[in-house]
Amino acid sequence: MPYKIIFAGTPEFALPTLRALNQSEHTVCAVYTQPDRPAGRGRHLTMSPVKEYAISENLPVFQPTTLRDPVVQEELRKWQADLMVVVAYGQILPQVVLNTPKYGCINVHASLLPRWRGAAPIQRAILEGDKESGVTIMQMDVGLDTGAMLIKESCPILATDIGQTLHDRLAVLGSNALIKTLGQMEKGNIHPIIQDETQVTYAQKLTKLDGKIDWSQSAAKIERQIRALNAWPIAYTECGKHHLRIWQAEILPEKNKETPGEIIAISSEGIDVATGDGILRLKIIQEAGGKPILVSAFVNAPRDWIMPGNILGE
Image (tube, rainbow, N blue to C red):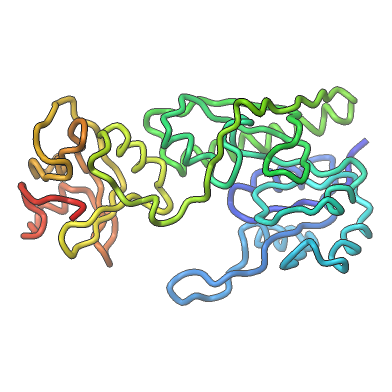
C-alpha cells in the first residue's frame, strides 16, 4: 500500500529524492523547507531549490522557522502522514515530530554510516582520502545521525571527483535507495541495523576558513582539499596582498627541496608550488573579482606579484 509522505528538505541534494517520490506511487502531501534566505550580491530573498520544485508541482509548501513550535507540530499532525522523509532539511527534529508520522521519520544521509555523521560528509570523505562513499537510509532518532540503518548503498570515490560531482552522484544514489527502502517497507522486509559506535567519525560543518591552504601539508593532501571544496567554499591562498582561489591542481611526481609555498616555476602548463611533501601544479585559478581561468590564459598577462621565488600563504 502506497505511503502518504511529508517531505522535509532544502538544498539541491534533496531534489532527486523529492522528484522520485513525487513521480512514484506514493503521495507527497506536504513539503517542509527552510525559510527564504538572502543570496547573491544583491542579497535578495531566495527560495530553496526544494521550494522552487514543490511550487512548480503544486505541492503544499511550509517554511517554519522551527519545528519546536506547538502550532507547527499540530499542523504536522493534521496531515496524518505515514512517513516523514528528511533529506538535508537543516533543522533538528524534536521527539514529538519524530513520533508524529505513523512509521516515524527516515533520513537520506550522504555517507556510509557510522562514518561521517554530521553536516559535511561528502567533502570530509574526499579530504580524508576515503576510497568509497555512499548513502544510508536511516530511521531517525533524536541523536545526530545516530538512528538505526535501513539500507546502505556504496559508490567509489574517483581520483577525479570534486565535491560537486560526488554530491550529484550521491543525490541520485540516495533517491534510488529511498524508493528501494519504501518498497521493502511495504513488503515488511526491512531489518534495521544498530550503528557500531566504535566506528563513528564526525563530519564537521564547513566554513570558508576550511579553504585556506597550509602549504606545509603534503601535495596529496592539498590536492584533495582543492577537490573536496569545489564548488564551495573553494580552496584559497594568499600571495602578498593578493587573494587567489584554486579550483584545480595536479600532483607532480618530482620531489622538492624548496620552502613550502614557494613558486618553483610558471608556464602554460601551470604554476608549480612546493609543499611539505611534493610539488603541486595549479591548473585553474581565480583572482579576487575575476573568474576561474586556466593558468595557460593567466600567464598571457604576467603579474609581478606571482613569480618564481614568491611564497604563497604569506
